[in-house]
Image (cartoon, rainbow, N blue to C red; front, top):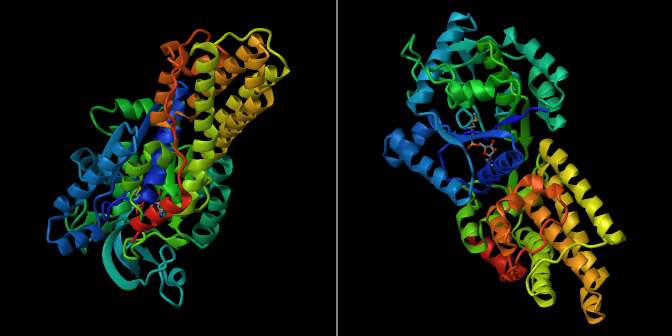
Length: 525
Ligand code: MSP
């Protein structure tokens, strides 16, 4: 198993404000990064903004500001959102930074020298929003972009081409030898059928019809194609091809580092076809995985600003707290499938998992320990069958959780923890502490409390990559020492004897579904 982990989000277009869909992708990457860090993997987590291209230039002109001013403002909003969402990224790269643009220019020069890039002329169908050229067959009779299904127009341009034919076999071979390279596997089939098997054209990697881009040093009529520029962020941010390549050597160049790109289904093609080709051209290793997550819609409709159905995460964080929003995103949708965001599902999810299950368990346990044991965790003595069963289940849960997280199955991993929480709640019903207390069966009562505390702390640790604030609150409620807080301490079942326990306010108040549905709906108008 590799002991380092490098995870990236797509770099977002600062062409409109971030919405819950962007927050979804970044939060999932954050959870994976926090999970690995917690378990001792050396981890690097990158996000950023993709700031060049025709679309941005047009938007800036519409607003009457320079493209740089335009992207500065929106990039700042992205940063603020990530701070509010408690995203633990190690770096935030912007493609207008010199540390990026200079290296991309030298990457282009290398490719030109290698004979992987040549100057030619392009005639085809162009989709402005996707900044992509398409062939006659690809746009069909209706002349619609195969990616976004918007109308395309005929265009002709002198441009530099990247020789895809030189690498296509190597890339498809890589898919065969590395079955997890593109996941879910259905995405791989889609790429093969829609693009590769139909025959790939050489890729146009420069533009002359606008100038908001990185200039080609060798020919300043041209700016670099936004995707060649953007994809390279994954290595420029690490200092590739500079005099300070430490991070690049430590993460990208080390075979012991697992490299994972998480991308939305809309940009799979660029990450699994062209990006590997660019890397091969540079003589660099390929990432281990490109994980394609599904897209979220709102009440069954594609989220888009023009339709006025975009939800911003800010008011949700303000009203419900950041952990609640993170939990909803992580648990409600199976990572890899498309998801429907509905206001009802938000409130229901929070009530079921956080208020009724986790929050309730913590609340009941701290109350009982304060009532029966003056707020001090009792010792586990002569555990019975039920206690042993829970110990076994805890071990199994931890193993399953780790395996699922390593396989990027976030909601499934969380399900394992939710199951243990359910079992712990049921254990209260079955062991009836109030009867044990009445009958003076102090040892048994103590065992129940010790096991409950252990289950709560274990679950809290496993949930801590998602519930970043709540986990700290719970550690405080149980007055955990630094050692008890460590991940390794999970192995020590019931190691909390003598800890003082505080009785706190409920962690997650129950939400009124009707009221909250109305509130969330009002945000989208
Ligand atoms: N700039 C390019 C990516 C370059 S990566 C080298 C881009 N940017 S984007 O802002 O349009 O979208 C990037 C990503 O945002 C998507 O791939 C996806 O991960 C996320 N999402 C945008 N809308 C989304 C939803 N409605 N639902 C889920 N994720 C969404 O493409």
